[in-house]
Length: 293
Image 1 (tube, helix red, strand yellow):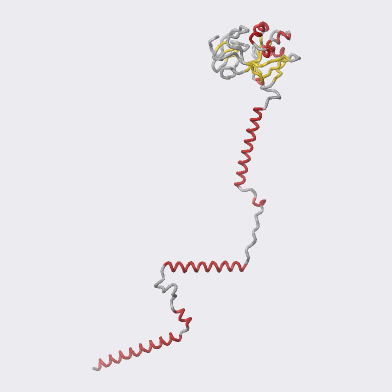
Image 2: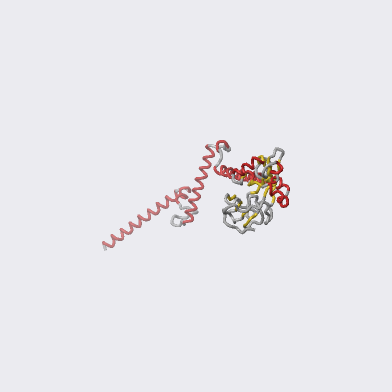
């Protein structure tokens, strides 16, 4: 009985103590102000710590960053206004790398076009100051005959792209039947000037395919190294695939007895079978034997 009474007293004492503590807590809450009570309660917009989601946390962080940025901008505006814009000085900047390359390309294109245009004009412009394509005063007929004989019958003039050879006075009568007056002027120069021979001016190209025709010292003929066409000393065809004799230039004799060759007037060579001088090969051919016609 005594033990049961002691236990009952202990239980009653505990109940009395718990009732007193609860009454004191209620009195303290009633005495708190509205602000203190609001701070003590968890935020209703975000919910309690246990109820916060990931999206809410991110939203709160974004709002905080925006607020901080706004405060910095406002503070900067209050400290110093932005400086006015001043355009840079072109002399200070100079020429950029892109501008340099663009201008260089344009300049090179202009120079190339100008050079091409000048070359076209030079090609189309007539020769007025001498050289091939114009009338050349080659020299006195007597002096030219001496040079031809000193060079074994063939004299080359590079400025006129021509060969000069001697035309015998004895063949002039036949020549008058085969050649035109511009050609005969040089051939008849020997007889008209009292010399022992005239002169003929032959174009250096072979009438077959345009190769330059050299002379052959042994045969005393012109012999083309490309396809074997052969011509006697005055350019009349003797063999090979050429369609005619060597082309020649118009000639004239001025008052001083000088030969004038008009390299701007090329006259087609005589037809196959023309042989006014009767010259045959005087020795072995340089290119080889060709079929004679």
